Image (cartoon, rainbow, N blue to C red):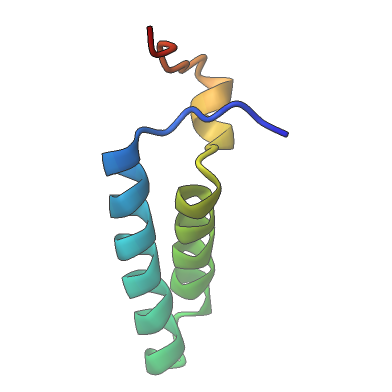
Length: 64
């Protein structure tokens, strides 16, 4: 559907950090915004497409 604009290492970091933020937000019960940001970060890592990167014009070079 969308072209991937996030590298494999960045995807892994997004999933790990996003999952951690989401878990922290849910456990603390005060930080629903932190949980939402973490969930969005993890989702962009799972999909491999970042809308903010696309708006900035970031494109990955195709593999030769």
